[in-house]
Amino acid sequence: AQSVAQPEDQVNVAEGNPLTVKCTYSVSGNPYLFWYVQYPNRGLQFLLKYITGDNLVKGSYGFEAEFNKSQTSFHLKKPSALVSDSALYFCAVHGSGNTPLVFGKGTRLSVIA
Amino acid sequence: GAVVSQHPSWVICKSGTSVKIECRSLDFQATTMFWYRQFPKQSLMLMATSNEGSKATYEQGVEKDKFLINHASLTLSTLTVTSAHPEDSSFYICSARDTGAGLSNQPQHFGDGTRLSIL
Image (tube, rainbow over all chains, first blue to last red):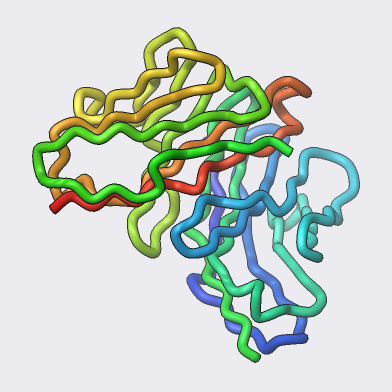
């Protein structure tokens, strides 16, 4: 079974500082990993994905994530946080075929001015 | 890019009412759509997988007679909450993947969700 874990419920960071939101995964076979962001009362917006290739994946709004196979991690990062980055972030994984995403519990990011 | 439209965005109704939520893929065809439910400050819980032209596949613990899913075309899936009660109040989100370019490379795209409040 595929699963992801987000160990932090909440991450606080000062504006302009780098941010990291952690995610670890457990899959059988090749992992297809994703990050999404959710703003209040909205659906999820796709940020980035790792399918294969370079371990460092760049996505929307300046976010990037590093795939680390030995640590089974896929942490989301941004070099300089903005107040507007404050939202709920979800790590997700899906298996082969058109199977649905399985989500982590989410991490609330608060960027303080 | 791929867009999923969900309607309505907000519903308030009396207990016992049935509520229909529509999910449309606007610029791609989706043979499969996914329905999720999200409780406050929690993650998304997959309710069912909607399959065009056939029966939906429900996750364990989800009542198929309570949550009726119809996927009559390649761009439309509907979720009907029948005889809704206050415990059905939640945020419902649909999702679809554009499978035209290959399954494994495509992210799921999400509607903006429907906030359902049953009084």
